[in-house]
Length: 165
Image 1 (cartoon, rainbow, N blue to C red):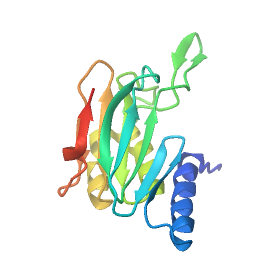
Image 2 (tube, rainbow, N blue to C red):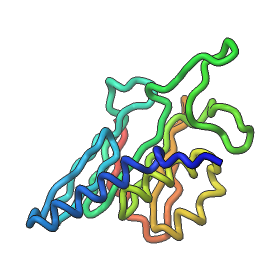
Image 3 (cartoon, rainbow, N blue to C red):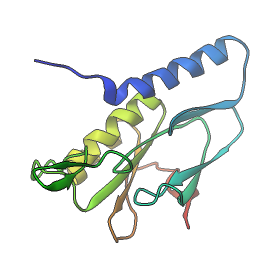
Image 4 (spheres, one colour):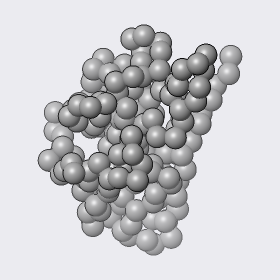
């Protein structure tokens, strides 16, 4: 058996960086490791969400305070397999590359949790709703050619602070 922690390593690193900054007297800020990020302190931070089919465009923005956000999407990782382009994220219902769901962003208290939940939501879709509630996390799903949709816990506040361009 092989266990690959690459899917949550960046989130873990972000959380440790925030801890180190706080331990050294930094009261407010944002740590961003290639799109996996976490805000801390009293100031709210405006976070721009990259468009998954055109990484040069911004799809929307969200205000975060004392929250982390991670995204898994189809951006750069398509490759050809048996004559077809495939992505790195699978549809748990089919075991095939996701064709309709192209991006999942999750906001949670810790970046490692948000990072891990993006993969789970990508695979399980609506079946992951209970886990989001348990983790007090919010998930934003973007489907190819469709409107964004939310899965969120009952006291969701992230949803009210997002806009799409």
